[in-house]
Length: 320
Image (tube, rainbow, N blue to C red; front, side, top):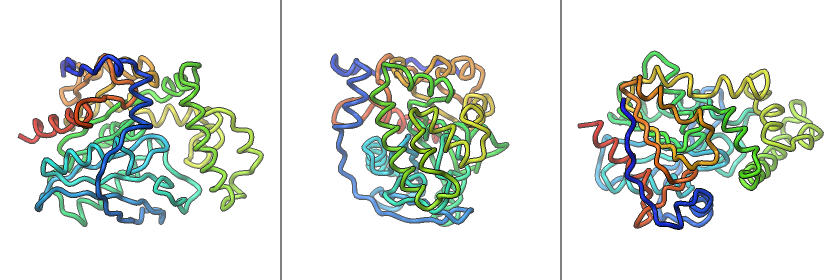
């Protein structure tokens, strides 16, 4: 599919990728009423789902997946949910394992390629809720998960009509290296602080699987993936995790209409995360590369972000 020319033009201040990223993460607020539902996963663990609804009955639903150390009530989730609700589509914001305010039951948690949990969520909404038109939207880590899910299997449920991936780190090793550069030190340290805190809580219940000495040895996100992510989720090491979980290798096999929105000034993304060749060779893959936007910082008017409006437009176009 030809590359889409972006129309995103933010104000002068938000042309700066750092400013737009930080503002969106720290200062944006969205008012939305959500109802929480807990589901049991195939391995006996649980996920919490945060639901919001359109006025009147609808058979349409968008499933929203958050990023690293995010949750179902982050503004980049609730902003999209609110917009879709206002346009006749129910929304469910998925909280990954351990991200809803309560530590999950298993030693494992979530990661960029944990599509088995997405499979369980999709099965739940199709079998229990009876939606006929389902859309997927992922942010950052959640975006990679959606792309991997769509491309790694022979077929997806026919109810899944379209998908949107925003600020997608399609090549995880490249993104990991970017997060370890000086320009991203503030982000890196913030992620590491939150991940380490959660891991210390988990270690109290799984002392045979992880020692305090191992946690204390974690000084970087690379260390975290080498010591915990790979061990807890069946990978040889951090590099094996990056290789197996990256969605880039699965993009050519996607057969669901899919829009990727990756800003060119996103400091988290390496050059491999702009899959121009894959988009040109796959009629189902649409790639939009705005000049601005940072990492999930597509600030626009009336507190409705550009990527949210584009997601709605894409869905409406695909279902005609």
